Image 1 (cartoon, one colour):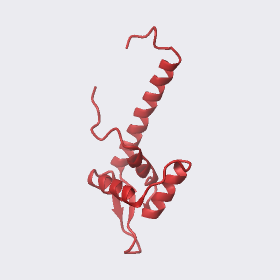
Image 2 (cartoon, one colour):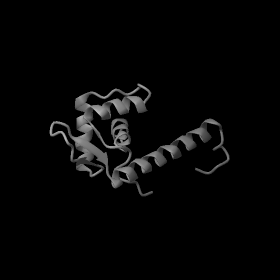
Image 3 (cartoon, one colour):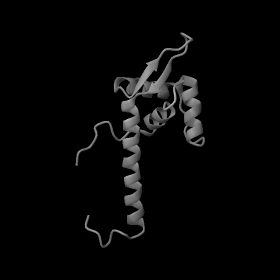
Image 4 (cartoon, helix red, strand yellow):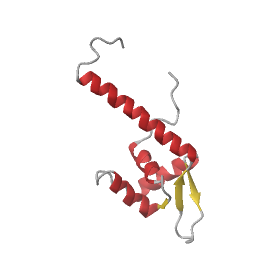
Length: 111
């Protein structure tokens, strides 16, 4: 099996990348992650900026020009969007497999 070395994404990185499907600055990212997770994930600034640095190094997000020099704005790159979609598909496959196992559907299937 050929595995993408960028996968799996951590939960924090996944949420930050998902939040940056639309450009945003630090505070907006933190709010968006909390909103997307239904309040289940609240990022501390250090955690979020660590994820941003990681995503920048991997080319999954980019910094954009902003009208305010005090505010850095980021957005997902095309590669970032592709990696996000690939990780979503990976998780869908895991959920499908888990559902089949939990329902007893793999008893007659060869693994």
